[in-house]
Image (cartoon, rainbow, N blue to C red; front, side, top):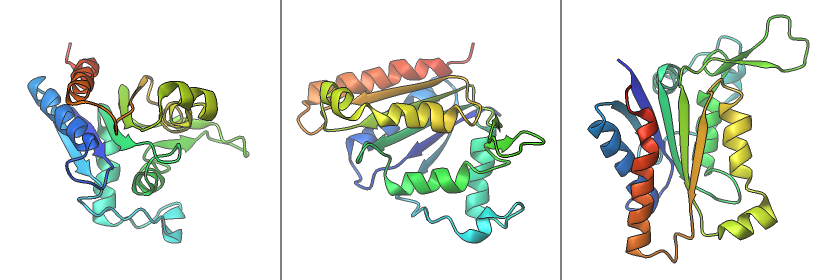
Length: 198
């Protein structure tokens, strides 16, 4: 059965990131879609990539193998995380390192001699990344250049074969009102219509 993989990475239960993830799950269910949900902090996901996992045919712990199987077959992907130092939290970066691995998310072309041209293997037709920050959009673009846009669109999902990537950033969370947060959650619902079955 087709499903959407939903990954949450925020340590504080009750955060706005949790509200985004809960809204995503409710919206997908209302659309009649199955969601495979992982709260990385709640699951105590180990982000440390160990040397044996770099082997061509590594042993993968059953929990890690489950993450790999799910993301490989998901028809859609939703990622929810805060912007910390222009990056995802370390636990999510570790999930990327350990789960979006060769022969799960990508492989290199036959005869590759070091060019590193990947063939994406993920089945997802689209990925949606919801991020939060406490930096105004104007400053983000002028000073930092929005590195998360490049990271998710080009460096991760683009490399792994996902043809459509949408990222929505909600800011400034720390000074937002209840009405503003509700409007953002409405935007989450609207964005997730992308996954509505035809």
